[in-house]
Image (cartoon, rainbow over all chains, first blue to last red; front, side, top):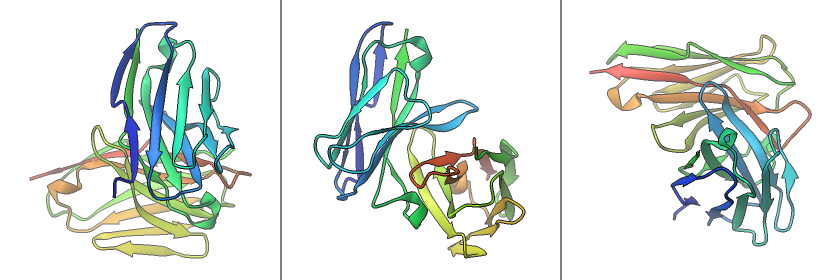
Length: 115
Length: 113
């Protein structure tokens, strides 16, 4: 049982380049999330999805786009990378809403550097 | 807007000590509170989830308590071991949102052999 899998694990981009991060979960979870983690700032929510075909903005959505075409996959796209997007990106999933005492399951992260 | 603070940012203790990590939050109207563990270069693992109606939750050597009225939670680790070395983060649902968590910045714990 793999849980939440993120690819790639590391990536270096030049300013202006684009890329897509892939998140896959095999737990049949409805909810999926993309977070970024920066030193001293904790984790901040970028976008999330409450089910296949849905997406919603989180706390820091600017510069990112997402898609949830299949229930098990949640893609995070950077159309024109900027140095401010250098960060560690985490995908997470849960069965239901976090207010209903559902635990959050995380992937192992993607270290992205934008030069 | 909910804000979560964890003090201290880093803690170093000798093996065998009992220790307490602190988490405070500004909006006491929370549904629950989660404690996570993060190992270097890894994702977060949920350790304990305390529902708003609970006062504490235990798992092995870990005990988490919740005092909603004062906006505080503590994670107690008994008989610490070097394998407990990691960053511990707490998180609560964002005010007015059932779908977003607000995380603290974490406490980096080092247990010395």
